Image 1: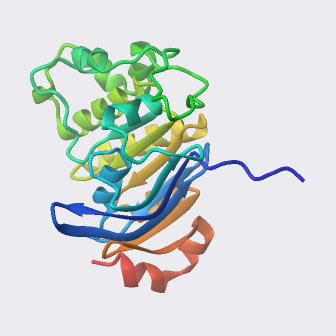
Image 2: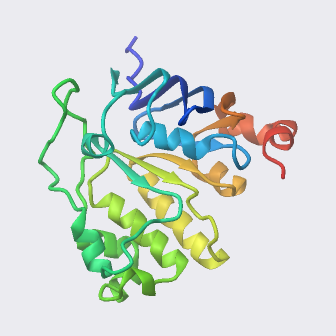
Image 3: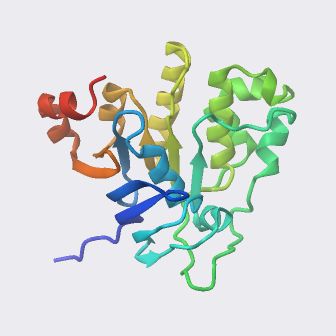
Length: 252
């Protein structure tokens, strides 16, 4: 019998907060290699805080964050990115005074160049790399607007750019915080289609969003947080079958 595969990312009993104010009390989640995991919960329950802690933007007060079985607590955000984690932050945060092309090349990484911290083993990076042609194939609208400044793009186009910018770092894991928040239905659907393509190509994904139907279609596993604690985790069939669970923790 083969041994179970090591998770790509594992968060264990995470506690953190802002200043002296604690926001997370006990958050745990696992992202297996090649799978898509949703992180769900009502507003203010700790989803974005969890993402920030994973990326090193907030300190880990207690618990552990492991990448391929090794603790990465204390690493800086740029070190987390170099390990192979691409972040699409809430609010997109594209550079408004740079063109689409400049946004993409400004943070692009060389696919075979490793900058791994000495105490962490080299990452098992994605088998394929990303370049301008490939991201423009995934998002044709960006190709049409490559000379437009970030501030000239619609919200949906900015989100496409934020995803494309993260892909240009050649991530093994893509994290999206509020993937389709505030977008029109048409542009939202284009984002979901692009994510389904990435999922089918084997890219690991951790995603927060409020569209349960699309998360069920995209993700293998789901985690729910409530008041800074993980209160439930399970696969899509379990999540789909439990209407009471969705009402208790996700209904407005």
